[in-house]
Image (cartoon, helix red, strand yellow):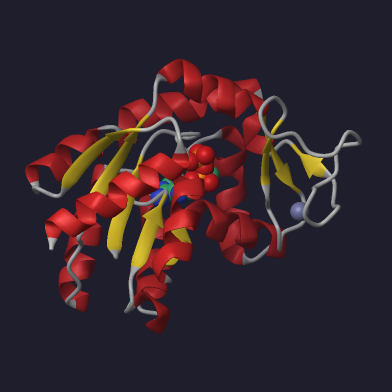
Length: 217
Ligand code: ADP
Ligand code: ZN
């Protein structure tokens, strides 16, 4: 499959992308994961991106497009890809359209994960992440807690709150989403690629996406 997942921070894009990737081997491409890896490695990209990310601001489009052009040219994308967290702005969507034309790649669908605002806020403030870069398991202190002493149940590393998961950064991320990313719903609606899915449960959402893809063929 060649799809884009849209949705607010905390809508469950990452979880849905992982399930879809396990289903048919399409690669999950998360710009957030790529940027966090760059920050950990203290690469030039990481140094540039960190100040934006910690505040919950978007990283400049030019940096993101450079990353994505390189990534989409990798041979593992030929089978299929699930874009998670990209595009995030109208200019990114326009550049992506040109890039895909250049690479002669056709998108199947753009899926918007529609999740109520209260659910999003609750999830973001209770979310915790495994600090082990190779694991990055996601927990929720209410619905899916780590061990009682705060360790990852998979790898045993400490589970932490991301720098951009302070209340201030979360508020900023949601405002940025509404202002810069929500307009993509209209953009892809006009392109005739959009499917809106009311999503509270990742597994059910994955089944709905598979159905939409079948209907498409
Ligand atoms: P979330 O969707 O939960 O906000 P992500 O992991 O997708 O988290 O992104 C984390 C941060 O990385 C964003 O707040 C932003 O600073 C940066 N980022 C990720 N993807 C993009 C993108 N496509 N364009 C600009 N910045 C991005
Ligand atoms: Zn872990």
